[in-house]
Length: 441
Image (cartoon, rainbow, N blue to C red; front, top):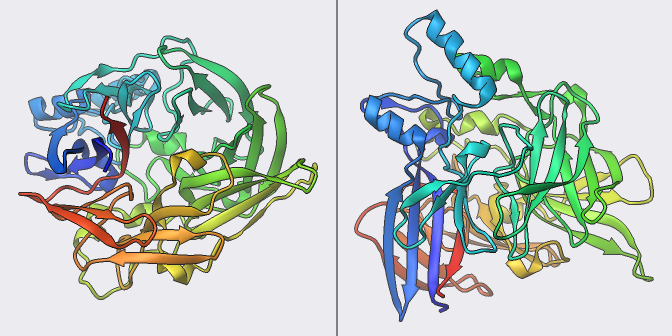
């Protein structure tokens, strides 16, 4: 076993005093570490000390706008003041509860949808060191919660809510300056589609324009709507745009069937027999164009499961084919039969050496039904179109680098998906979302 530390981030505290939060994504970030060295596992966890978390602890109430939570206003003028702060970003949360990445220069950063929620942490002590202050003048309030991070670069998307579109930007190791590669203008809709994640190939960035779009009206509300900061606009259609990394030029912009996804898995370039790139293949965890998955993740729904009702909406591995011959339409189909993974699919990962390249295997969370939440670890074989599933009653797996859940860490063989080792922890861990590996220097 390679020496190093697996870090996992996610919401872990869902209440302040006696007030309980509404949604899974509202929870204040809890960072977990699993340190592997000399055959031993050392585990620990710590709250990420965002301004939002510290203010809530100090004032005993929500003080910033979270995913669904907003501060409780004492009067109308307080609400008006908060709206004014919203346009500057001051009232938005910096609760970095989504992902954690290791930059090419060694810094470890926790992230969420807001740009201010980019927090640098110490991977050994888990101490919050401060905010990653971007030194450019690109502005904006939000970005993709899942940048593409390699030893050579940091790529992300900046949605433009005023003039609907996306900036594709790159940041080199050792700097805090994001430089624009290019811009994609939205094909339709009153606002950009939500971009929680996006895929890349070796030479291209794929920019999704989903009909689940940001909604300024919902953002301004003092109480949440069923789709929170978004709205479902099927009449605005769905599109995928392909940008050349080197030139910033758009080489394809195609309409595709309606889709809903949080997480793209990978993308690669399809070549003909002469080695010419003819299409881009992009895979994602696709929720059958059903936006109700967001509301299903309300804590009340998750905590009221009786073990019998099958409440998890169906999902699949959605495979997009984006032609590069000028065709106006792309395809979306299932990469394998959804019953192979129990019609549940999310929290995906791949071998990082296959990023942007043709690949065969992916790892994700699937479902053993009846269930209300993904409850299996699943290895997908996208060539044989088969899946291997690991399930244990009562366990709630997170993104499968390692399995961390109800008080233990599990190590599975990457080929056979059989259990190699298990380490019991002295307490139960909160649910986590995404992680990264920090090798020992």
